Every structure is written in C-alpha cells, then in structure tokens.
Amino acid sequence: MSEWYDAPPARRVREVLIELSDTLVTDFDVGEFLDRLAAHCGELLEVAACGILLVDHHGALNLIAASSEQVRPVGLVQLQNLEGPGLDAYTTGRPVQYADLSDGGSPWPSFAAAAVDGGYVSVQALPMRLRDARLGAINLFGEKLGPLSGETVELGQALADAATIGILHQRALAQQGLVTEQLQNALNSRILIEQAKGYLSHSLSIGTDQAFGVLRSYARSTNHRLADVASDVVHGRLTLQAPASD
Image 1 (cartoon, rainbow, N blue to C red):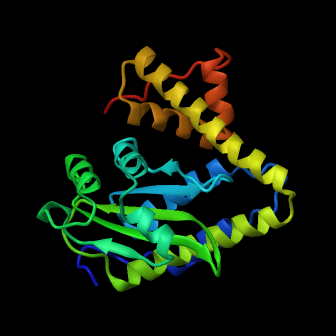
Image 2 (tube, rainbow, N blue to C red):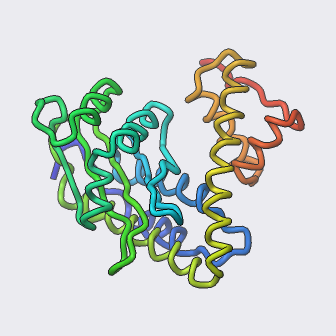
C-alpha cells in the first residue's frame, strides 16, 4: 500500500455505497449523481482529482462530472483527441493505470501533456460497466508518481460498480425516451452550472474553482439541486456572496 494512503473508515464506505445504490427517486439527476460520485472518490480514495466520462444515447462519451475545474480541461483533451486512459477503460472494460505521465512513454501523448501541465503526474481509470453494459469511466488523477495501491483501486472500482448498478437499475424503470431525456438534462444542467460559474467568477472577482465552491456550498446548505441553484443565479433570482477570506 502507498504510504500516503490511509484507508477510510468502513462505516463511511458503507454509507457512500448505500447512497450510490439508492437511485429509486422521482427526481433522479444523472449529472448531480455523478458530481457526488466524483466528490466521494476524492474523499475516500485521497486522489488529487476525479473526472467522470459517461456515454450518451449516440454512443459518444461526455465529460459529465469533475471534482475540480483544474482537471476539467484534462478530461476534455481525451474526448477531443480520442485518446486517454478513460477511453481505454471504457472500450476494454478493464482498469487502466499509468504511474508516471511525465516519462514521455505513455500511449496518450496529448493527454499526458495536458495532465502534466495541469499538475497531475499519474492516472488510474476505472470502467463503469456491468457484464456487457458499459456506461463510461472514472479517471483518478494523482499529483504524486506511482500507481495507486491495490486496496485503493479495489475501493474505487467498488464505487464505480455501485454507481453503474444504480444508474442501470434506474434506467430499467424508465422507457428509452426518459433515459434520453435524463442524459440531455444532465448536459443542460452542466451548461447552466458553467454559466453560473462564469457569472460568479466575473461578478465576485474570484476563480472558477471558487465560484463552483460557492454554488456547491449553497446547494448543500439549503438542500437544493446544484442545477437549480445555478439556474437561479443565471436568471438573477439568487445573489451569492464571495467566500470570506481567512
């Protein structure tokens, strides 16, 4: 096991797995569900960042969730250049890892360069799949050289599997038209969130990471959906304040 990794309490792991499995709600939102998954990966696996790719009804992968703004451009490079560990994990259905992206030997030169420029030097990609069903992949980024420990990878795959089962179970309850609508809603929600981040970044003179933190903090404290808060900000129904400086 890597020296820097301390296994999370078993109780917390159980709580997260139960949360990811409980998708039988009428207002289930794929985008927000995967935002929570990205946050949980950072919390439980102690990786620097997490980005989640999800396939749409056309068979194309989309970057649906990211734990930070810093990692989002790295995830998009995979899609733009059709190369990267997430695509490989999705295609093969197997975990993919590279312990030193700065060594010049990775099979994804454009992705590796973008990752290193973003401050990440290692990556682990985990497939979101169940039998023949493949939904996407989770990308785990590290700021330290070396592979993740076997225990960390196992827990990460357990999170990916729980999320996959939850999404597939929810989809099984709906017609294909509703599934398509949910995926489109996830993309629409992401656009709203991006617009709200840009607005807050400009109006409050803060970075986009901080702007996202303001949105997420308000949504959590008021028990509102992140997309609803973003919509209120974009349409002038809600005014948020910059975080207090230390």
